[in-house]
Length: 360
View: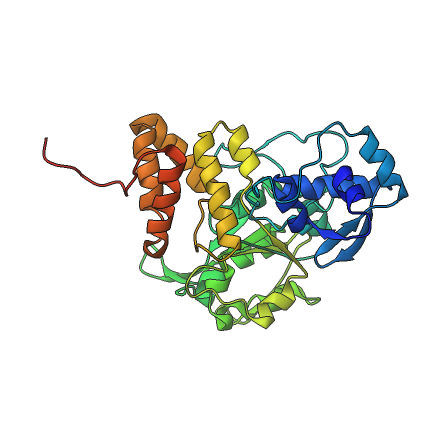
């Protein structure tokens, strides 16, 4: 990285431009740039996007480097991570954090966020009562991160049919034929001082979400009109976090909702983790390539970490041929031909969507 900046000392580069020159992932390039800045061996001259240029100290850093400097446009561009490279940060100090076991028994591997492990960053934001919205494609690990950060989590799975009663509570018939009021997850989280996840929050009607807002502002109270007008005050520890899938049909991030979440974090698939989990290397390479094409607007879909984990499970049971065929088959219809072409080139033989064959 130092060699590239030194060779073009009069110019400034974004992470994306450096990725094209070096052929490494956006996360790796972003980390290297920030490491040079932290060492005072390069200068950050822009923030949106982040731009970097050489300083007098960059020359010394370049002389210490042993990797050859790539020629212009000779190395093919490497696929980008779906996480914006401009937000990449160096690994947290103190070494690599240990995986965290989620409620379902699966392990979550922390990622870098604002120079901290993401789990630690979310916990600090909770202590400061700063609401967070995580956004990105389905399957990128938004829910996994939140579950790892908050063991006391209560989750509301949002959709277009979610009602105020689903949040606050409603009367339910008991075994004796009478009715009793059963508090909803919002009230439970407020009373017990727990974290509340609004999963797919932008699928919930804005009128329904309005019932939540008084609990998130300075009042930290709601009025349960259906239950004698009872006022519920949030206990210490109560915290709201939300997930948003921008590409899902019907998802609308209203100004009222966005304004309640002071921190908004984009979440993309960690393809380096996919490789570390020993998922088929060709499948990971295909996913990276599709992610790059998706960012360029050439294709609308790319496999995320969830699909890659499923790929490996299918490969272990039915074989890699079936797993690649299924990868083509799960692509949206409008992107399926493009995905099939890319998979075919990657493995060197024709691949079509997984389908039943002739009768045995």
